Image (cartoon, rainbow, N blue to C red; front, top):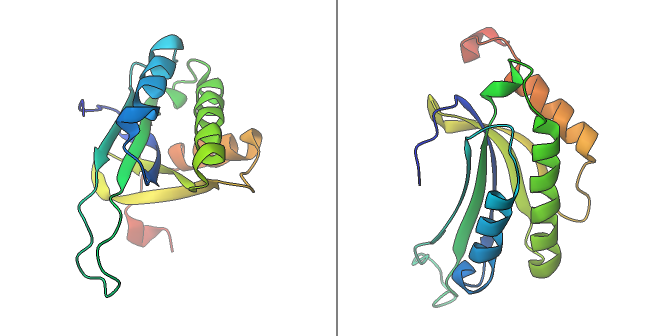
Amino acid sequence: MPALTDECVLNIDGLLSFDPAASLRQRAQQFVSSRSWSTKEVFYGDQAEPADEDTDTGPQEPLWSFCFCLGLDHILAGKGDWRGDIGSLVDFVQQVYVETGQEILVEVRYRSKPWYSDHITYVDDSTADLGTICSMVERVVKRPAKPWWRFW
């Protein structure tokens, strides 16, 4: 995965019960390269997940994870059609959800705090509308930078 330099990144990820190399990877890469994004910080990736060996039910089917990452630092500068970028990503993964039935997580992650994220929504049968998603993303990204203990 190329290193993203933005502090705030929209991360959209999910799990699949099939190898994305068969169908999703090529479509996702074509999707990423076909759009004129408002940032250069855009990425698609997928990988096989390790088998869960702590189960009593025997061997599990292999799982693969996939993700889209979109840098969000340009929101603070008020540049570009970032709402359109998010809408395009959500539309793309909504189709993946329709095809697989697997919910997909949308969150904002931070380069300086890789263990922390702000949950935005799930892409599933009750996905929030784009206006709500963008308002939540904007609120999180524009939140003043304070230590976590000062929020309470």
